[in-house]
Amino acid sequence: MDEDQPQLINRPSNDPERATILLMGLRRGGKSSICKVVFHNMQPLDTIYLESTSQPTTDHYSSLIDLAVMELPGQLNYFEPSYDSETLFKSVGALVYVIDSQDEYLNALTNLAMIIEYAYKVNPKIHIEVLIHKVDGLSEDFRLDTQRDIMQRIGDELLDLGIEGVQVSFHLTSIFDHSIYEAFSRIIQKLIMELPNLENLLDNLVLHSRIEKAFLFDINSKIYVATDSSPVDIQTYEVCAEFIDATVDLYDLYQAKDGSNRSGKLQCKSFLQNGYILVFNKMIRGLALIALLKNDANSGCDLNDSISIIDYNIDVFNKALKEIWKNSIIKALPSPEDTKN
Ligand SMILES: Nc1nc2c(ncn2[C@@H]2O[C@H](COP(=O)(O)OP(=O)(O)OP(=O)(O)O)[C@@H](O)[C@H]2O)c(=O)[nH]1
View 1: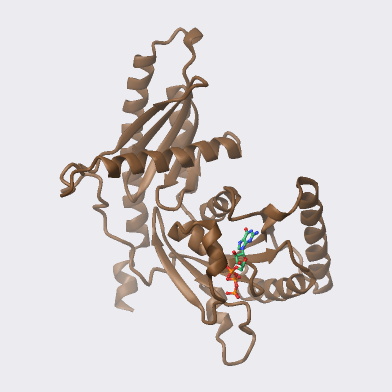
View 2: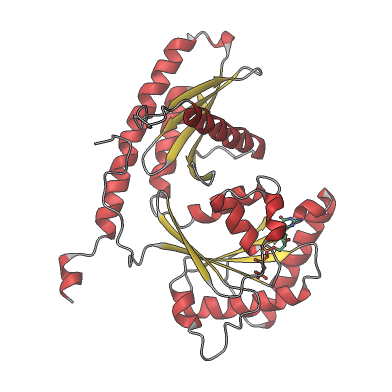
């Protein structure tokens, strides 16, 4: 069996732990564009040809976790009696509300406050994430002013509605740079139950391997599902994401026509001009571990020795990842008692 293929059983499709993200917002806010760019590799400029969505749509993605992203069209009235909003909000892990920062947003804020009030009532565990979107059209200063204004107004609206204790996270995003991937990475990480274990493993890997930063990426979407506990700097993220594209493109280019060289094992190292080294290792479930280290001639360590240690430690990491995944599957499966009922 191909060592790299997921050999473990998939979570059942009716698994209550399945992470569902609900994308909401007024018309033309950018919801479909975000889905297409992040999950379908559409070029950002091509989104101008997208037609307005008239029906709720759901896309399923399988990465470390099975993820469903449901988009609700801006013109839908979720609070109509015929629409079963309660069941919908109860089944959702994160509510992502998209605000067009280039447009008049006061109506969007009133709509958002109403949705938060309802969603929080039926599902207090829901994560509420606000994307202050299309910030590519705003100057650096104006972005921060807009964020401050939106946070203040939402706070006031919630206070007026008598809602306290709701955690709302805000992200400045655009499909024209990496900010949308960064935001989705943070949102999806909140839905991964195994995250503390993964972060712990990555911290250990960094500590024992002279690595400066390590990311566990989903190769297709370029979302990172975990990283070590040192702060994420967006430029490092960008370099790592581009390195994934370059590695995968090269791999595809050199594969035999019948695909016979697809052993499944994919590793790549790149020596950058600034003295840094990037290491790519494919893991289970379409994931890749990307490590960034400094090739420091004054460190007294032999580079080849350091790389051998890193390769060994990454192998150990991969085994641990498989274990974590296996255990999470076992936990997610219904117990015999549940199936009897
Ligand atoms: N400048 C800029 N334009 C964007 C961005 N994201 C989306 N757009 C544009 O916004 C317009 C509307 O995007 P859609 O994705 O169709 O919006 P929607 O929220 O799905 O709209 P409905 O389907 O009507 O609910 C398109 O022309 C996109 O190209 C962004 O980050 N920056």
